[in-house]
Image (cartoon, rainbow, N blue to C red):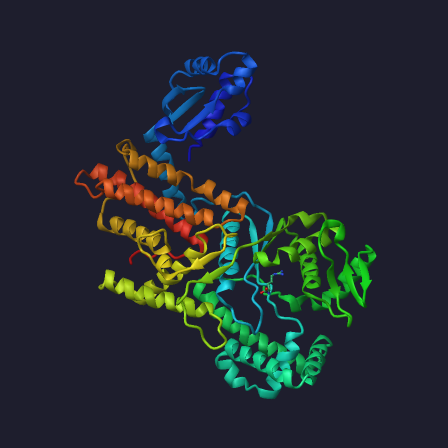
Length: 566
Ligand code: ARG
């Protein structure tokens, strides 16, 4: 692909000794309106150097450049030199690049040789994977895809909440009132029931709490029975979580959760003591963070047991040693902001300079619009139910829109689940938002189905024609404003991916695919594509193919399928 910006930088630095090409590159702007050209170079700085009016300097430079085949127009607008790229060269460069790169279009090798750990999802064993968890799961998975696309070697980690005193309670409840077969059939809801039952019974009989503590202690000491029961609880829970991950098409490279670090605690405590970071406080040990404007972090309890934060410190050290990460990313809700600030500070105080590479990526909360879901027992909304309902509703919609569609079940899955994921990733992650079916499944709004439908429309155009748009395309024929606007948007995709990675913000990609879909639909509306003139048809189809590819690649990054028909 021709990098027009760089070409401009080269031309200008050649003509003006006082400018070097990198400098110019940083100064080039995009004009506010496409009628004003594609790039603009401001002459204010040169005006200062030469003590001359900027428009006069612009005039000198433009005259010395003369004609350049890459640009249709080089003109002076106010204090700027504006460049309008040659439409034919531009369209050819962009479209051919997209068609050549295919599924790789937009990818870069920025991250070659660098490891990035992306931790996301991290649900708690024996607790429901609820609608709130979907945020971490889909944001994290998208970031993982985006970093991978940029050439980083990513490691997707699911830091399962599989350790802590609640396991003592579950073991007591399981032994007293549980039945493994019943639990296996419906793991999380049944385990949740047992957990609730434990608390009800413990109100009446406080000795149960002691018993639970004893069982957790046994688990920590490696007792066979406790370990077997804990393992079983973990396995059946994970099986249920995996069902949801499968629906979403998400895979992890590691399920090293909190329990994984239990035997790594003594060393971590030792390291913290060496650095004189631990202070006794009523029998417990804390790190005093007052100096940094934060409450103290509790590292060990009176009975010597460790806490969530202690396990996070151990996990970070393990990840550095094991993966030698370039970045260590945590996709966890903003309620845990303080927790992350505290432990990253502690890592810094321990003398690890890689504390700066540990990044908490927070997000806001999701709530459900009234009447969105009826809840199962326990008043929690299960993510799996939301996904299933989305599929069901989608099936109704597509049966009406396209009754003869083959493979309706599979497409309803791709569109229904895609719609929920897309909706999740539509807004800035930090914003709280309200989930609504109307917005999620609106085929005409800024939704997943709308973008997927646009992709299917492009696919259908390509199916209908038998013109080969891969060879001998006359790009001179692409001239109209809507057409060029579309090419310009496609050209931005690689920058968009980079921007999303830099901001840890998958919604940058989501918004972008909506822009592509809208620009395409405008083009589709204003331009006849399957025209009789074969040459013209070929040029327009090449553009359609490039749009289809770009939408597909964008959707893939955010974890949404791109069906050919719907
Ligand atoms: N299991 C925790 C929860 O559901 C999230 C874990 C986040 N990750 C971490 N390294 N602390 O709240």
